[in-house]
Length: 264
Image 1 (tube, rainbow, N blue to C red):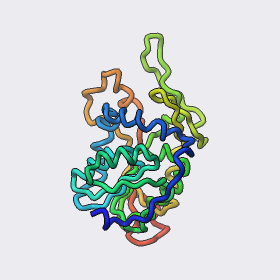
Image 2: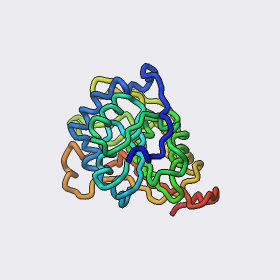
Image 3: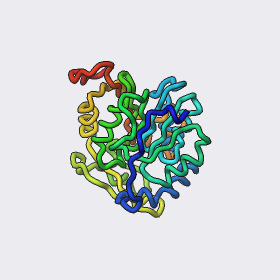
């Protein structure tokens, strides 16, 4: 199956050139995923799958696939998947876990080794926030899509401009301050003993990049839990008060029409 996939020779980069910190964080991130990232398992997975639609027989590119978890979920539903990540530890873990269900490719999101107009659906599952050149990444996703194909992208929302919750003397959440929202800038996070760089951008920066790629917005969501069962659980209270993520589904026009920048 993999020989028929529309791949070029993967682009490579020396592993030591990693200002983001993700290469060194990869092993710990994989452990984090294996423990069960509740924001994915309880909040995003079902919505992402719903927006991908019926994937049986579809060729899907998972950009920034990490250790390949969501690619495997798609493959279980009948998709032919290409899991792509920049960092060798992620690629190696994905290959080890895929059992031949997916083609695993090393490449940056901003220079995809994929032929144009060959992919049914591109998935970006909380990836743009980690990509320095996100505009090129979105343009590349649009390039490889077949006419009529979809880009399904979940990303962190405005909370990247917030240092966290302000709390009262008893530790109860009061509000989340937001500052420097309009400034595109890197943010260094201390995550499970590692420093990782991701990026804050205003929503308008992402929207302009999608529109510049001549994509048509088909759905926009700010996912919250589907029921109220966790509303009073302190661990999950955040999700009901302020949405942490955006989720969009964009479509490549059936014909090249720069005037098709509209809501569908």
